[in-house]
Image 1 (cartoon, rainbow, N blue to C red):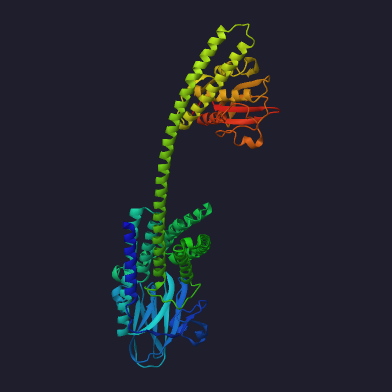
Image 2: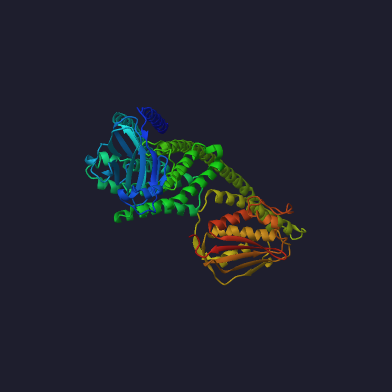
Length: 634
């Protein structure tokens, strides 16, 4: 609840700052230049005399309002005409603030007067204390005048020209700085609160978004010229160098944010490699900055980022299509960020010239994208918190169910223990009485000894059935607790054969003289007794049961294998898949005693020993292969 209160406060402050900042009025509109044109880059002229010559006038290409030349170290010449409504001092504003060298050529008689500015000059040497560039022109009449500008930059080459009267410019500058400070404050507020939320919630998406906002804020501060004005006014060269690091860092920081958002709905190993590529490559492009190759390096970096934006847009649209209204709050904001990044990249490369967008610091594009992403992430955090709460509730209900199951198992164990005790006591009495009667029986009574043997055999069957229930209950409740020791497997198998429910002459043993095995002997005995008893019960009365024991190597692991083979009806293909399940019995065996627990016990014991139990169909009959590792439990 406290986190939601913080999120609500952030939204309120963001809305208030935005409304108040946008609501600040600009007192007057600037005077736009006319006949703006750029000299064809194929020409080699680079002085005012050659550029203004009559034979080069046709080489100028007309522009509407903004010149976007991309990243190039070659200078560009602009020509424009202005006709002011009143004579006097007019100020020419040139945006953006990232131009290294700006020269204006003012017509004077038969020549031109040259004046210079740029972000490489000390701020005190500029004609006006302003983040961008100002030329103060004294225009003595209202006739049209043609001017030339020479622009060069180690960064993006772009220019937007506007004419102001002094008072109107100061009013516009005040409104611009006010809006810029409010927007900067909102971005910094968003950054701080997301850092706090990341600390509280430990969600990676919030941390990456905070880094994304910070790098955007730093990039805008440098590209707008505010850092040059307020932080590095006496060291513009340092400001220029530091600004060159901002774009690679922004691109590198944006990739983890997109990954943390997209990976929730779209996971692929190749996409992980794409994100790693987009994190590392921008950092590698930092190296050319130290060698004065920023313009060419960042140009290729932007070109490489375009396929990434296209890929992200396609993936986001696919996820949006799949999720539909379920996450409508998230994907439009992400898509807006991706598309906005692609358009900004095209503009910076000079491949797209959207001349209706101003170059000022407070243009709403990047700010709007961050706000949209912030709302999306806040809604995502709310959804994740809701999902966590539901998961906690489900875990609590599951824990209650587990406790109830444990209680039921405990009660069942006590019940089974009581029943087995109550059954074993009378069975012992019956067996003892039968033995007494058998010893005192007269040999003259026909079939007396045979009847007593049938009684005792029935008693042993009931005892084994009770033992199966008791063993199944113990295995279900005490899992993995085996009494492991090393013993002679041959001796164990002979004991199982001697204790079987048939005459010894039906048992055929195939085994070495001695074979050591490390396992739980008592549990293994239970498993083998069940296999042998099944072979006896489900095969013809006079048929033989073969018991095999031999060393066996499986997947490079030494072990031993017990094979119990009979001549019974076999196991059908449909039954083979579920024969080891609890209470499962074969077809047409209702006349044979059993509870369907024998093979279930065998499988559980074998799994506890990390072994394998397999069924083989013979012609006729069935063979069970019980393999255990030689050294028991790892």
